[in-house]
Length: 136
Image 1 (cartoon, rainbow, N blue to C red):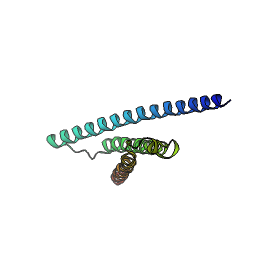
Image 2 (image 1 turned 90 degrees about the vertical axis):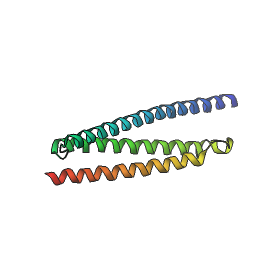
Image 3 (image 1 turned 45 degrees about the horizontal axis):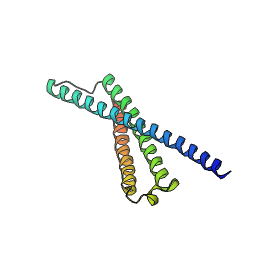
Image 4 (image 1 turned 30 degrees about the vertical axis):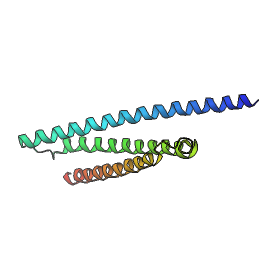
C-alpha cells in the first residue's frame, strides 16, 4: 500500500516538473521576443535619426504603444512564473534545504529584478500611452 502511495506522489511530482519545464521554455521564448522587439525598435530609431524622420505620427506611435503593452503583459507573466518556480523550489519541495549548493537566494534576487524590470516597462508603456493620447 505504501508503494502505491509513493508511486502516486512520484507521478504527480513528475507531472508538475514537466509543467515547470514547459513554463521555462515559454519564458525563454518570451525573452527572445523581447530582445527582437527591442532591437527592431532601436534600428527604427537609428534609421529615423539618420534620415531626420519624425516618429511621432499617430499610426507609428499607436503600433509602438500596442506592442509595448503586449510586451509589458508578457514580462509580468514571466516575472510571475519565475516567482512561482522560486516558491516551488524554496518552500514546496524544499530543494534549498536538500541541496545547499543550489543558489536559492540568487533565484529570489532574479525574481525581484524581473519585477523591477516589469515596473520600468510598465512605466514606459504608460508614458507612451499618454503621448499617444496627447496627439489626438
